[in-house]
Length: 197
Image 1 (cartoon, rainbow, N blue to C red):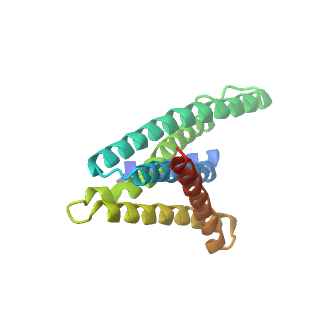
Image 2: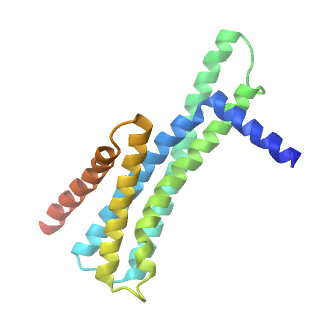
């Protein structure tokens, strides 16, 4: 119990030193948004071409989620690590000391890992959320699965917008609708492209 308390306190300290919460929030919304729009594009393509195999739809969606997650993990880790090391080197120059084995160095490594994990998980969560209906084709026909999936995707976009609105203390409904509009624009462009092929 004592170990758990000490570990929790250490993580709290690292969060405060690294200011990771704000960055993690930003990454979660940005990449959750990417996940939703990517799956929305995939589903619109399948729907407009009258594709009816739920196993392929789900498997393709999951593969896309995994690819986005790995891309997010690697990209965020390398980018965030580079930025944090650069900041640490600047601080080392100012203090004329090596900070690698200090709390600041540990907080840097902690923040890099947290941001990379958030970046990987966010698109996977939102994309998987949209694919859930295709697991229930025993109870739902394929068209219903598509419609429920579209509804879930736009719900996820709205919730992400509300989350941003709470952070910026703006009107929650308007903030949510801004994300939904991005989804609608994505659908309209996809429809125009696919219908003109």
